[in-house]
Length: 284
Image (cartoon, rainbow, N blue to C red; front, side, top):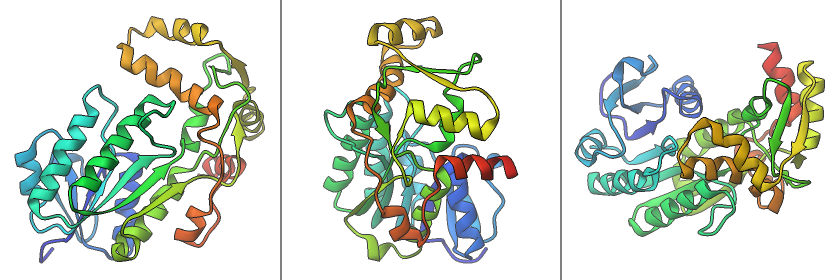
C-alpha cells in the first residue's frame, strides 16, 4: 500500500472493530489497524498494521504519526481501564490526531448505575478537554450478548426487575461508525445514542430468545444480595462483580430505556430488533 493512511482503527481483532475495519476496506477506505499483535490483524485491502497498547504512550504516539481521524474502541474491562484510556487519548493528541470517534456507553454519566459507564463518561470528558474534535457513539447493551446471559439451566438471573433496555446489534453500531469515519467533519461534537428499535425487559427478551432459539429461556429477578451471592463463586475482584451486577441494576433504573433514531439517521436503515437479529444469526 502506498501513502500513509490518515484514518486509524483500534479493535480490529475484536468483534466491533473487526466489523468496522472490514466495512471500511469494502468501501476502499485506507486505514491503519492499531493492534497489540500484528499477526492477528485482519488482512484487508488498503490496510496496514501498527503495534499499540493503550497504556504505552510511546508506542501509541509512534503508531499514530500522520493519523488525522482515530476510531477508538474502549479497552477491555480492567480495573485501570480509565487510566489506559487517558494515556492513549493524551498520546493521540501529542501525535497530532485531529478527531477521535470513541465508542462510549448509553447514559454515560459520573453517577450512572452501570459502574463501567462512569469510566466511559470520564473518558469522554478527557477527550473533550484534549482539544481534539470528537464524536461519541454511546452504545446501548449489545443484542449479541442477550443469548449468552442465560445459564446452563436456561435462566437469566439478575436484579433487573421490570426495567427495560433498548439493546442494539453490534452490526448496527459498526455501520453507524463507518458513516462517521468516512466523513468525520460532518459529525464533529456530536453524540449519538445508538439503540435498537424497541425497549426490552429481560422477561420479554427471554420470551423472544425462546421463540428464536428453540431453547427455553426464562428470567429470574434476583435481589441485590442474591446477585452478589450467586456471582461470588467466580472469585472475581470486587470491581468486576460490581460491574456484572450493575449491568442489571442499570436496566432496573430505566437508564437504558428509550429507543432513538440515531442508527437510522446515520445508516439510512432501521436497526435490528431482537427477533430479526436472532433470525439472521441462525441463517448464517
